[in-house]
Length: 291
Image (cartoon, rainbow, N blue to C red; front, side, top):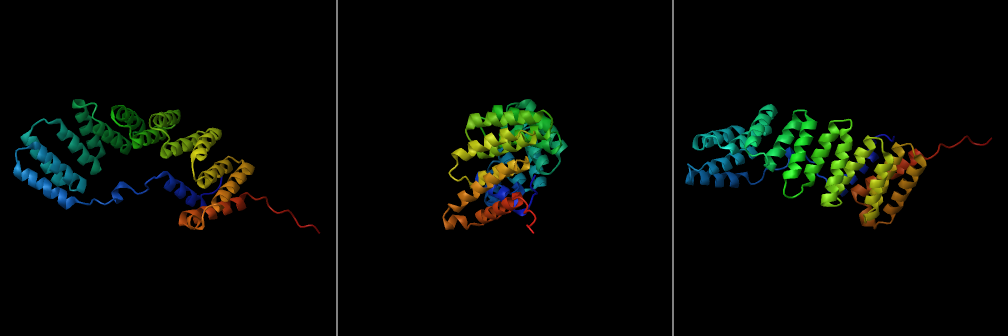
């Protein structure tokens, strides 16, 4: 297998960009608009201090901003105004989850789902908590329920379920791939799902299946250079160096057909460097000079 060199990383980044994958963690995204939201929530509470819904809304605004103590104070007021309201368990579970108290969050969300067993957001939150608790198989089965109950299919749910099944190891990797294929049949060709399926095929040692999936993507893609480069990576990893070299050369040929403007972008420059290095790596060593 080729080493994870800088050109290899460049290829992976380029593929991620092509697939539209966001690599930033959610914690790195801006909150934005909190002052406006909290001002509106404060006004609603002041206008209707006995309306538990207004307190719930403000509690969630506080939670999203990371002010967990303020959120819990508002939820305590909801308990006083509407004792036994199931949704309070849900919001308390979200606060505990965001605060990193995962065991507490799981218990709260499980209690909420006793009252509303088909609540999509509640099911998803519990699935995420189960993952955080190191229970990937339970999380995967929770995502099964999320997908069934979600009115509109959400690609991220299929991704999360596949990752959870794959993390469970063994035969569950096969189940992960089956779930991705289910998502593809429901939602059509989604690159993110296809890429994960390729990675999982490779994980279970099925190089030919991975290549078939990749070939389907390449055949319909208007830009083939990155997919051909990925094909070369897979072939090289399988020790099929002659085929890998051919794929790398085809990728380079596709790249050279691009306009100078497109070819000189940072992503394409990194890809070109990666292709040249991989071709050099696969080139046969020079024999001894004749006397």
